Image 1 (cartoon, one colour):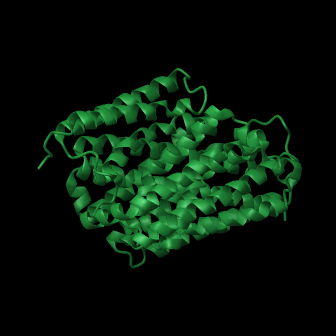
Image 2 (cartoon, helix red, strand yellow):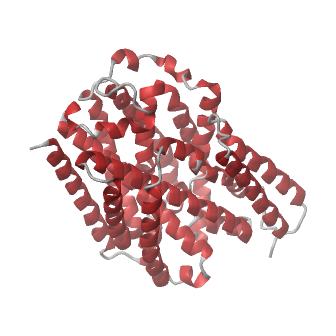
Image 3 (spheres, helix red, strand yellow):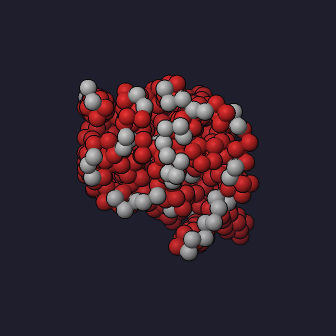
Length: 457
């Protein structure tokens, strides 16, 4: 059997498994299950879903490419993510119970109750934009893998992936997201075997001096980005809302951090292994894709498994972000009748999923450098983190004037981000945190200025 045929068979089996999960999730499912997984998701599915979503397609591209260039220098990002997960394991249980009592589905619902309608709308807008961009990135990754393996145009892989995602999300909703993420998580764990077949240079693996290879500015920037990637992640809060109970959050979130570290070290080892079989002049964002353009450089069964697993992690994040996009849009931007009536909610969400996947497929064709796109464009959403923290700890209240001031603070911080992005101001990763710093300062000032005012009744 040829390497291409081996890869095609592996992809076919994986796609059939996804479609089966979607149809199986739809059988006997309640409207609550479609919307939020019936708020009964246990420890293993929550942990697997979290870890699978974090280790997405662009993450696979990033870590293999960074290992190829900087070695262990990128691990500061994971340290930040673990700190963020521990923080949410502490504060998440209280938020989960609060959300269940009030039937919250999105983080926008939570902020509307805690801060006010203006904050809800601006944060939901950032979440919708971020989810749209994340879906675009995952389609880009899957499309390029298929294009390199089968010798076809990128758009064919992109459109095919979008169709598969649409089928199981249309029927299964959030329940299918959790189940497919759990399936994909166990596939990702299998990546630990790949370095035994694409063996890295042990001298490079044991060279821990590369921890400082990115410089202290970018290392600190990565650490901060890692923390707020979690805290500002609407998909992460979705896991809190859908968790079965407090213990689920307290156990699953730290466990996800442990498995995420294992998966990341595995991808770094794969990156080191590719140094021995790939040319040395490849740019970091093209290292992984180049492997699939020549299936003869290693065992074709191993490459097929690696390729399908990368597609799996891409689709894991893609379906999660597609769900976050639709739920945030319906719950936080449409008239209330669409969210109260669960039948209307489901019908509109299904249609919106189709429009989302069509739109992101078009945008993904314009992506050129997935790593730069990740840090420069998508990091815009981190400016919402101060509002989330203030709402969790009760530092801010639903005071109309405070609501407007906080909203204005986010708009200013976002404007700073756009200015830096358009003028190539992100000279290192610490500069990516400047808009977040602006948001922290302005939100703090807004809260202090309005602390003595009365809450909205």
